[in-house]
Length: 155
Image 1: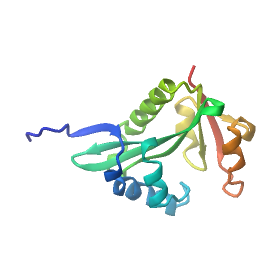
Image 2: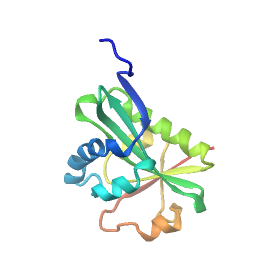
Image 3: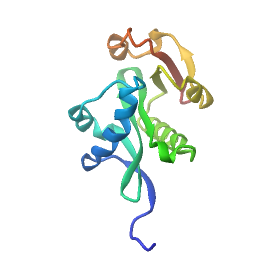
Image 4: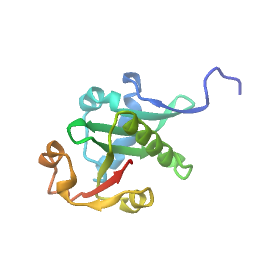
């Protein structure tokens, strides 16, 4: 195949991509693995997202939500299409989120999860108390979900 574009690339998400992350996140939201996000919320936060595009289709995404007052970032919405798992794409997304966070001067990442805790542990995250979250995020923590708080220093 001859093309001007790379077959698969990791890049910042754009507003035109919004359908891709919606499709990736919806099944995970339905299963309770992710908190539901509206199209409007995704559009508003699109600059926080990375996308893996393969042959014109979004097959992976992740977001970095900044909490500058605490020098922390939330790793959110890590999702890879079922047909493309096992190719280290989750690790690729995490590595780029970490690079972004360091460039922004953040000292740690945190994630809230009800599933896949082992994946985060395998990638340097450690269990933490709710108090480890930035105050704004701590105030909006959903106690009913009982998400585990995981933190990874970026030092």
